[in-house]
Length: 466
Image 1: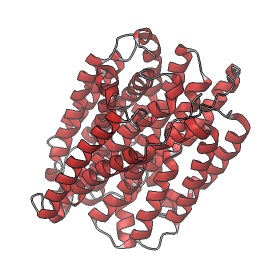
Image 2: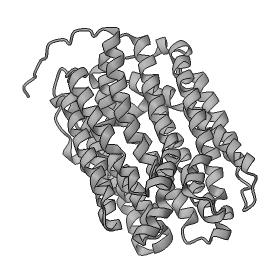
Image 3: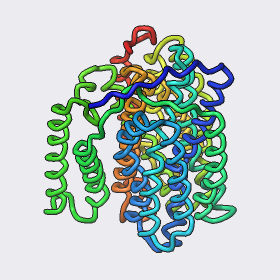
């Protein structure tokens, strides 16, 4: 194979580096926002397009499944063909699909457009992180930049319901997609002016068998979770799904173990630091998305709240994430990931336990307090998880490192939506609170798992190997 070399990129000025970070954060805010902004609008979408809970789950997961399945290949493409080029292509695809979502005449068209949105988003998430990593060569400054990046992404996820509720109240559910257009235009212009072109020193071949198998594993696993309540967990179709997911997973591990440059090297997960960070990312986003979906259906169906009121109820979560995420980034830069991960685990666990006894008349103060605790935990979690995972690979593979972490996040999002939807599907408004209680136990369990991630992490940033 011919190896292509590239000249070393000159060091950017401090102002230019932080400008690049701001541009990347703008695009990542959009990707994160679209992961959760639709949640609060699901009842309105269901009413407008005449679709039930299961179809609404696919409206959310069509985006996250495609995003999760393609992230790693998009990161590798960016390393090969140029990160700014792939980043800008992703913006165009994402913006075009957003317009298609806004004018979708049916739920089928909306789901298809959401899937295309996921394709565009897959070119933004890992690529933006790779651009940030390569623009900041100093390890301490890079840790701070990753902390900012992760905090913006986390804030966008938490702010989605609040933003969605306000837009739906004023302009209807289609406005949650129209709002993307001006942000896309601004990001395209700013990236052309400020973001430098970069790529990996050596082009890696695409792993098409690995990509196909990964897509099957993720798609079938989440699909069975969504459709399980309808088809029956022990039906022939469900059993076939379990078998296909198992075989595809085994084949994926076998194929990737034998390839010289795999899509996702299974050997990376032998490193406790990297493997635990990826599992932690899954757990955090399962907890977040279970919380958001159960909140949406409980407040709007059981309590009769409007989308705006239901979205506003998550404001404590957004505030908690906004305040604690930058603090978490600073703690990671100074002390390493262990302390913020421990704090994240504690807050998410307590927040989930607050709602284990949820009923139709649960105090609003208790609800808001639980959302605040979960938001604080979410804010503390993102920076140490991202920094730990990215630090496990050299900067030249930053696109792949960011992609694996982002894949774990989106897989967690898809699993959270599927699990929460399965708990409340076909449940009456009166019984929804009781049916959702296992979901809050799951949120607490996800928080508890972060203690194990913290234990596996290295206490100080300087101890991490490149």
